[in-house]
Length: 300
Image (tube, rainbow, N blue to C red):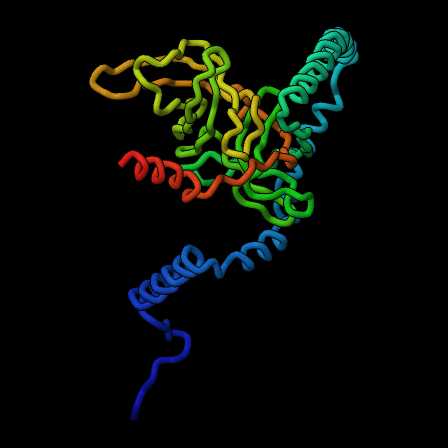
């Protein structure tokens, strides 16, 4: 008489078989996402589906923060109002000077035939939380494609550049901070006019100025602003300050360490710049090489 084990003791495939199946499935999903971008639509749908859960999870911290803001003492409010009134007077005087300088600048541009720079548009966004990846420095904002946020747009605060939008969802956006490893920004030294590239090191609060020759005019305390030659960041935005210079005679370039001026880790609200000005297209390479070729043939 044949005996079969009851259904209670049936365990299904062996653990090794399950491991192989799930490993193959994981590799297939990774390849489909990295090479063929087939999971972008699924990612967008999942982001919309879990958005209410994210807001619910962030609700307690938001309620505590708003409660703390509500129970501010009357004395501190009066002190803050006095300070703001003084800052408003100082800002009014500075605005008058700025208006005069802008008018003079516009007149000079008109005389020189230079093109006018249009004003930048920006929207205010709230920082919801930091990304969970320990190997990258990113934050998530509460604005997405529904608010005209797009990939590549710069993110700033009152002090300087914070980062750049690198991934957008319908109601959320992921921002890569300028301190993230490998993040590049073309910058300009305000004092000397030297152009260079500022790169993130992956270390909190540390940036590095690349390709600086040993004899370059760079000093501790120099202010670095965006040069605008990349067509992404508007020119003149504060980025970093030079902290240390380590010349190495054995190398071609000096090691220049900088600190970011923007609050890359202590902001609750930032601005997403939407009106960055596009640069004119580059001339074709053939047009640049033709005059040289003709000159060479004529000399021959």
